[in-house]
Length: 84
Image (cartoon, rainbow, N blue to C red):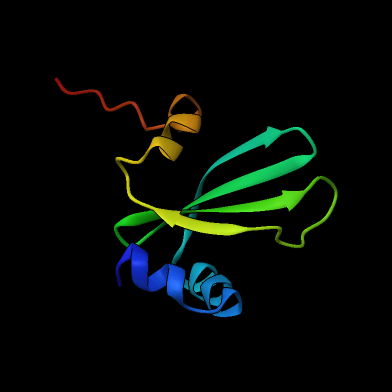
């Protein structure tokens, strides 16, 4: 599935796909909204929620090289591998 295919399906189906195959890799708060970033297949999906509610106010998918990733790069934690 591509980003374009994901963005073209109904939001309910997008949520179902994320529940079964997505991994939360980032979160952020901006104003009155919470955002969750999911890694799904070879791309990322951002879900926007009003603060205090778990009802989507927007969902969008984008590639790893997109400008949207800049909002999360500093907050994504990667494991520290010791190579001897």
